Length: 317
Image (cartoon, helix red, strand yellow):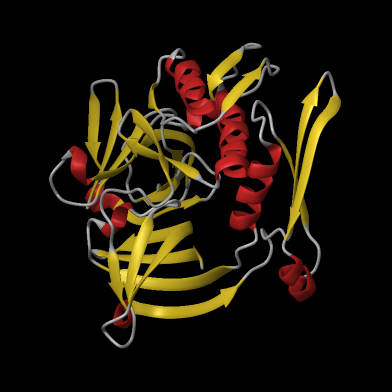
């Protein structure tokens, strides 16, 4: 691993000074955070960039963290420096849009607006239209709003994959590198089930001038009897077929997700890049069965050339 600090033309190799390094991400959070503790640290500055590479070469393909130091403090007694950095997309939270007009596919409108701010940002079409003029808000809030609508209307969740100063929005599970852990690599593993985000009834409503012009409700009677009535109400927006949207979303939202918590220790540099939204595979105890899981949160730590990762996972069956 290499840990580099950069500010304008200044570069420091901090690798040999790192006492602690950990990073984390979670579903719905755009930017990863990275906490560090540096022994005998050189003079670092706020907004200087922390760059972390899984290998020993400073290759873009091996870099899994790139972003500004947002806070730090130096111990007066030891001289050790502790701090937190966030990925570049942290700036999307610190800047606000004007009262913009949205008119077109939600994903492409999101791309248009964020690119206009000067950030290298790509986003696929979400598959539904928006016509709206929302109030001033942070770019992060706009991203969250539109991706939540995407999940409601299409069943797809999205995350932001960072590549230095380029931000790419991807559907969950569409990472190009898919790590696989063997059961023998897992220090801890527990499986379960969660109904926290399950809905047994879906109602879709279409509005005009604050009045409901069309409405459709679909329900899963068997699941209502099994786990209770939990209703999701969705604004159809520009979608005119409210019944089809309700049926489609009930099929997605009424699936019971399997959950899993694992702790993995490894030295796989590719797996160091794991973040919320990634697909990973697990080779189960029989050394034959391979299961697929989506990472909903990742807390990682590096010490002595080894990665320790606490992962929360989900799969819908």
